Image 1 (spheres, rainbow, N blue to C red):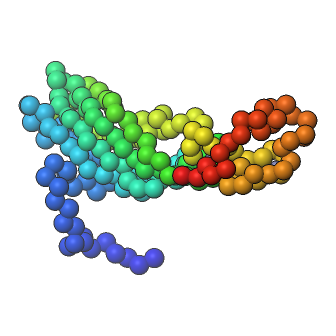
Image 2 (tube, rainbow, N blue to C red; image 1 turned 90 degrees about the vertical axis):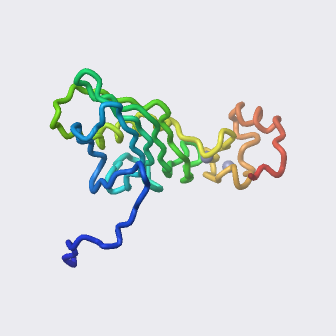
Image 3 (cartoon, protein in one colour; image 1 turned 60 degrees about the horizontal axis):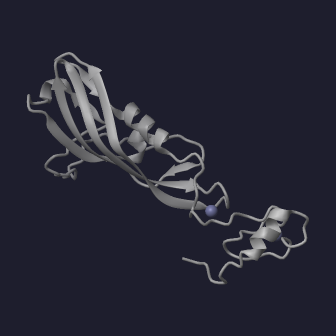
Length: 181
Ligand SMILES: [Zn+2]
Ligand SMILES: [Zn+2]
C-alpha cells in the first residue's frame, strides 16, 4: 500500500447543487437555510458499500433530495437511482438494471448543531427496492431443469416426452424462432 494522503488537487467537481462530501451523505443541520435546500450528487459504490448477495454495484447512487427543517424535524425527500447487476432468478445470468426509489423520505428530530449521516438509510432504501425475484426479462425462459441449457439462447430436445405436462404445454405455445432482443 502506498501512503497517498495528500489532498488531491484534481478534485474539481463543481455541480452547483452538489456538495463536496468525502464519505457518505452527511447533512449538517446548521447549514440548512430556513427555506430548505436541494442537494444532488452521486454516492460512490465504496461510500455506499452495498453488500447484498447476488447484487453488484454497477455505479454510484445518484440522489436528488430536498432537505428542510420544520419545527425541529429534519425532513428529506427525493429520488434515488442506482445501476446494479443482479442475477436472474430464472436463467441465473447476470444482467444490468437500475433500481429507483421515487419517493425516498426520511425524517428525524434534530438539534441545531447535529450532523446526520444519511448513508445507512439510503442503503436500506435501495435494498428494500430490490426485486425479490429479479428477471433479466419478463419473458425469460430460464434454464432447462433436465440438461441445464439456457433456453433463452437455445432450445433443447429433452423437454418433449420427459413426463412433465408443463413442458408439453410450453411446446404447444410455438414460440417464434427468433426471440432475441
Ligand atoms: Zn433470465
Ligand atoms: Zn434440456
